[in-house]
Length: 298
Image (tube, rainbow, N blue to C red; front, side):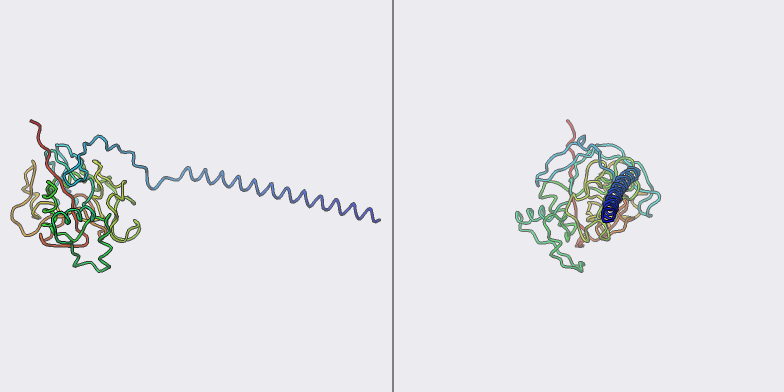
């Protein structure tokens, strides 16, 4: 009787071991099937951000007198303005520009401090910034708190000039009149605008959004900081502007700035969007980049 109970116990233990082994095998199979299913589903998901495979090496670059890289924008016709934009963006028209160079990046705090040390120039100021202004002095950030005069003086120091409004727009949107530097639709991770979804509550270090480069490889022409250009602002200027190398209206009240900033909405970082301010305005959203004309071949 004792042997019988022992045998039943052994058989029971063996059955439990077999059952446990089968349970382990089943769980392993479930895990494998789950992994296969996940990989299958993942392969069907479209990437929200595609890699930037554009080749910018076709555009000539030089280093300016201020030690900063510039990109050559070729001569030719581009689409200026927007018939579906604001009144001052109309009419949309084809405009010719001679070749010119544009700074690859916005002028940074570090760049501007080099200029200030060499010229004993006044510091930027931020009368309209509500937060801790010290953050705006981060060396890798684009410089802000500079007036139109300050921007002009920096560019002259570097043997450059401010871009014309037309030059700025061509460098930002290419020849075919793109709405944004990267295309005709707003896309995430292309620009630093209002809100913290892009990872930056204020400015971002210059060049932080490579996917947002223009067709020529110019960084931050939408968002981050708005940029002074050389022209006077006239809301009716496009209606009578010359179609070759326009340089803006004459002797008006305000100067043009372009590009939108870290405090702008999507609609305000469109490449054809125009803004204006008095020459002496200093703001936490307003900086600049420089340009220069290409010497014509003899």
